[in-house]
Length: 64
Image: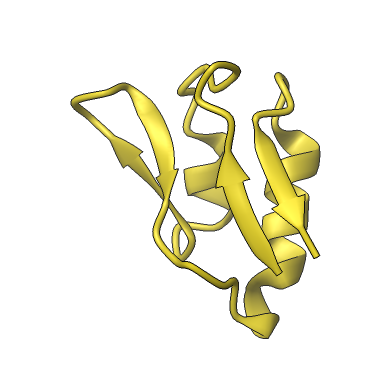
């Protein structure tokens, strides 16, 4: 699984960082979250899916 963030949609509410800090980190300079990994480790896929589902603007995009 790969994941990316659509920065045109990201509101910077940090929810993804709370749900899965192993994959998402907040960028204080740009006021958006960013993805820390190229490929999501299998044991974190459920957390990444949860973060995507809870992302209000739908900025988290998952690629299988």
